[in-house]
Image 1 (cartoon, rainbow, N blue to C red):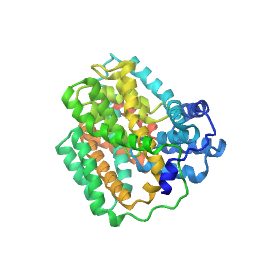
Image 2 (cartoon, rainbow, N blue to C red; image 1 turned 90 degrees about the vertical axis):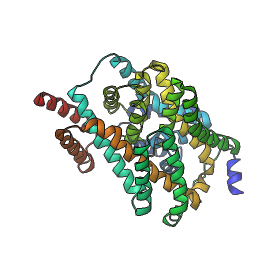
Image 3 (cartoon, one colour; image 1 turned 135 degrees about the vertical axis):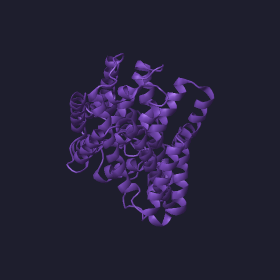
Image 4 (cartoon, one colour; image 1 turned 60 degrees about the vertical axis):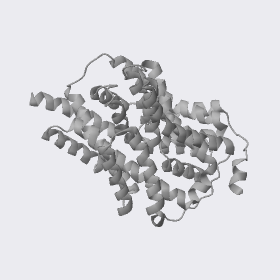
Length: 409
């Protein structure tokens, strides 16, 4: 009864969408450093400087966005926008934080279109570094999401199936199987709900359930529609929407899933893909704007500006559905033992899907010589042990790759 009352309560809004847009655009221009750094910028801007919400509410928003798929830092910003100025505020927060880097990535895609960089040493260096970056993401996620025997078994089972039966339907099926496995096998492994007092309201119950239904319907229905229509537009919508629905943690975790979606169908070459990935390290804001580059660079259509808009909106659409659907239900989600058990199984399955993607196409396309393996190990060491920033590793990998190509030819 209390949850229902909260869902039907509409708070007095303290700000406007234009105000949120200005604050988010400032963050979108200056936020270098990846998702963790973004959360620090958000805390300083929204909690300390502007006092739009208190420490407990901010911590609870971060916890919610870490628990659901999608780009965690962007989702925190969208949720703050919703709490500040309703749904228009959430949209303004997304536009302001995302647009600067998205525009930069589209411009880069249009500039390099038509230039062939296949076989370039610096590009192969980027491909090798990508192996280290993805391996770091998988390792980090596995330590928190698949650390003990049952969850590790779910993760490895998902990886085996994903490697042997690579398809979009397989990925969705593995997520569902992970939820069922969590309910069956992980109930005893999920502890008590964390303490907290946050209560996020202002979204009606009907809107919440409609968004959750739309999220699930598109996730299951788009692969079927894609197979039935053979439309390139539907195929692109499905690929980017499904990627946005399956990525936990955001950032570099999205790389292998996107690579698996755009390379096998022949929408672009690995060279084109890795060129954009290298450029994405040099711009501020969320790494998910890499989707805008891919949409602009794809062949055949949709591409250019229309392709970029389709890819960018598609990869973020699941985040909007989930946030609008789950913000009013947050108290129940935090306390529901069955829900947290199912989510634990889903998280473990996602680790397995990423592990499979690390093998193919990331590893198989990059590690072809002993020297590649050595360079990859060096990059992994710098990332994991010495905590060097990813963009520095990317630049160093490109330089090393070019130097090795000159030495070995």
